[in-house]
Amino acid sequence: SPPPGPRPIQRLQESVINRIAAGEIIHRPASALKELIENSLDAGATSIKVTVKDGGMKLLQIQDNGCGIRKEDLPILAERFTTSKLSTFSDLSRLTTYGFRGEALASISYVANLTVVTKTKADTCAWKACYADGSLTPAKAGATADPKSCAGNDGTTITVENLFYNTPTRLSALRGSSEEYTRILDVVTKYAIHNPHVSFTCKKTGNPSPDVSTPSSSTTAQAIRLLYGQTLAKELLHTSVSSSGKGKGRASSASGETSNEDVADAENSWNAEAYFTNANYQAKKTTLLLFINHRLVESSRIKRALEAVYNGVLAKGASPFIYLSLQIDPKSVDVNVHPTKKEVHFLDEDAIIERIADAVQQALIGQSQSRVYEYQT
Ligand code: ADP
Ligand code: MG
Figure 1 (spheres, rainbow, N blue to C red):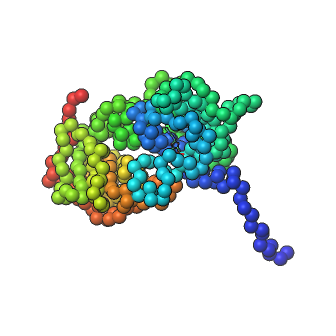
Figure 2 (cartoon, rainbow, N blue to C red):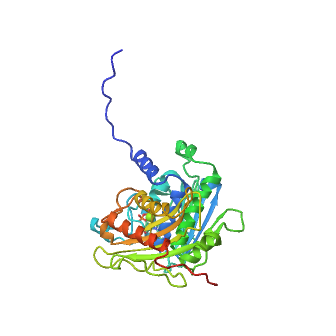
Figure 3 (tube, rainbow, N blue to C red):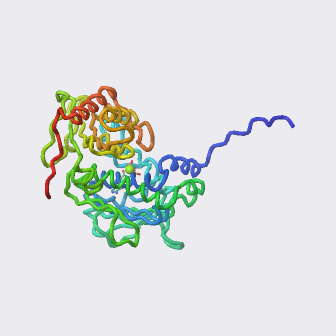
């Protein structure tokens, strides 16, 4: 038979487009959780409680004590491209929030059952709203879709149920619930270390005791010790470098106090702070917690540069733990590379990476003594 002729080009249905787009942002329970944690942090929460059932596939719930959502915003909350964080394109260059695309809640509503209970300080009661495919939906058959008043604390509780119920391929691509839970714990752990002033807990439903639990007034060094253990913590070094500095790591304070509050102020200025293990610590593979402007990101360039430093210090096959928080002028970062914002590129990348790698190396070879002192709390 002759080869088939061209087939007609058709416009995809809105619902198909949105479900495809959702799949690019929400890969698995842990990626949904990352978005939800970032929303809670953007809302100024000091307490974030995560509850998980069946690796987050059955249930993923996050309760925060942040600013809450105004009742009048609930109808468009889960629509695509609705956000309180960005209004003009140029806002992108001075973003201080994690979110900006207004896609996370929308995406979740396209691939899961989404319920929001929220209360602002000004509200006398909380409001509960359920969403499907970007819109309000009735909680049960016969009910209306409008938000219902209910009892609740200040802040927001987001419940995600039956993730990927309508995308069976995605569901079957997930690992078992225990591996998905491990990834969830990993995300919570990393954000807890980067936000030592916020209390985080993460537990499975029905379990009385959490698997991760941090206090709300801690330091980075304390959080690392709590979450990664004393064996690692006792081998930690600390350094900070900045564009205005002389290139040498500033010695850490005895308390291991962090300076996440130091934002890059002047044009193109930057500063970096790192906690990293010395030559006595030998892990099987590298753990790199990398935050750029408070976003958890990945950078194979930074990872390679740091591993090269450790190659000269550690025995073959041994790997370090590194926490690195880099703050750069928002103008010089392009956060808009990928919907998950995981991939970040910035100006002067090579020069900045080299300065950081140098500082780490100096501390490792002992030229800059900046041990994180042991201390009692
Ligand atoms: P984005 O974070 O990019 O704005 P999201 O879909 O993640 O998009 O959230 C949409 C909007 O919903 C946010 O801009 C914010 O106003 C509100 N929001 C989401 N989660 C919370 C929360 N936990 N507390 C307060 N407001 C929230
Ligand atoms: Mg968001």
